[in-house]
Amino acid sequence: MRPGTCSVLVLLLMLRRSNGDGDSVTQKEGLVTLTEGLPVMLNCTYQTIYSNAFLFWYVHYLNESPRLLLKSSTDNKRTEHQGFHATLHKSSSSFHLQKSSAQLSDSALYYCALS
Image 1 (cartoon, rainbow, N blue to C red):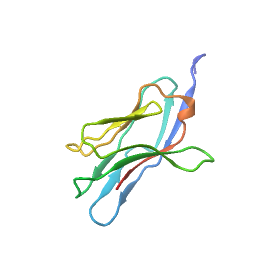
Image 2: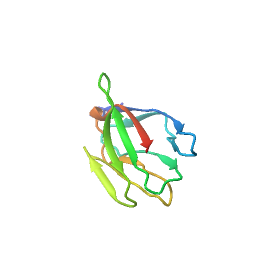
Image 3: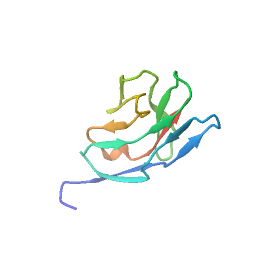
Image 4: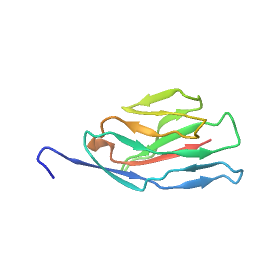
């Protein structure tokens, strides 16, 4: 590692959840290791039979309870919180979490949910 650089460890729960009605959420990443200061994108795709579904991103820091990071039900509207952003794209059934500059404090478990 070069002097002045620091790795950021981002843990991401890899899951495909279904409620039995054909609704599901898929995250493709497992363990993601990044260099501090570089951009990050965590993918989330979904399937649902409902047109008014809500998509959520939760973050779970070590020794803390999970908490809501972002949510949306509005197509093509960017939502932002704590430097993270995501845009719900109903045409591609995606709600990818992004941040322009990852920080060591971002190390956590991230998961996408559908309601």
